Length: 158
Image (cartoon, rainbow, N blue to C red; front, side, top):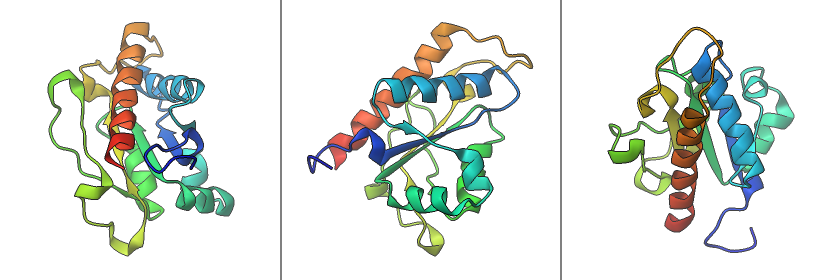
């Protein structure tokens, strides 16, 4: 880190759902956009699920994790937890669809895993899940904006 107050983008790893519906596609595209905006770095959720050693080790070194689920099934959260990376339990959605919460306010995960600082479920941002891949750009922007604000909040809490 160049500065003790701000995480560099590569220190914030983003693990999106890439599920078989519009909200999985939105989560995946939001991760791509957040990486392009240098808010963090999209990382391989399948590598976590496959217990790929190099991906697990890189994830352990990350300063912050972002778990992005498309829907209430929460595959991203469950995959990270299965690999030993704790994911926080979020409070109910607040105004603007934000879930501001950080590692400092939570107990460490069982087993000493990493704690996810941001967990977003796309459908909790009032985006309807449909069983096709149609994606509304306004919905995508809503997710990118929500996560960007949460990442900004993480940097201010450090």
